[in-house]
Image (cartoon, rainbow, N blue to C red; front, top):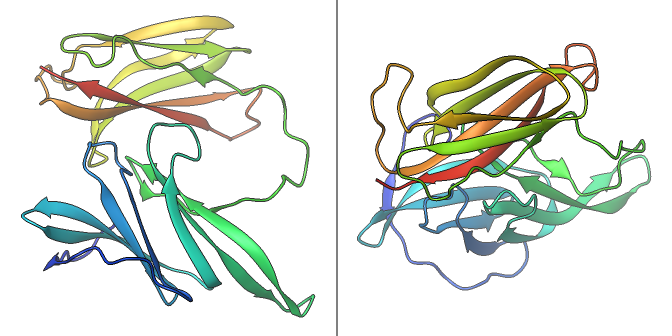
Length: 228
């Protein structure tokens, strides 16, 4: 997920630690194989299995939280496990520690996204979204999947397909759409017509229009499973 050198290591998953250390496991990228994450003195390390009880360092992040606890679970209902790190951070304005939770979510194009604080929004959020990407059907699929999306206002929409490594496979929709439900299909091929291998893929919707504001882009991603 992150760039840079990769190191394969033999590792055993220990039990929980006290203080600022901890461990959790889950499937962050939807490939059916659990990863595990270790929290050690302000460093969060995510390891991915390479088989034969060996793991590869997949992602690393430093933070300034103290007395942390770590967990993995599907926080944003996208069928992928997210990393949640909770702890205290010093606030110089109030001269005291404040509790905070950071969520890291898997993004097939940009690896792990920046954390999102678990706190109430500063301003009221609208009851609608600029677009809604619906689950593809059938799922799993072996030759053709239909991907639908709904728009409360006219918008420019692009539907891109990515593989697990964040590579763009193809674009199945790109244009202006009116209010209502629309759909596109993907036949499991690249942009030049080459069939792709079985596995997990992601469809990302990108929408711009009056509801997103000038220059803003609304995105939503769904996971798909291709089984040939």
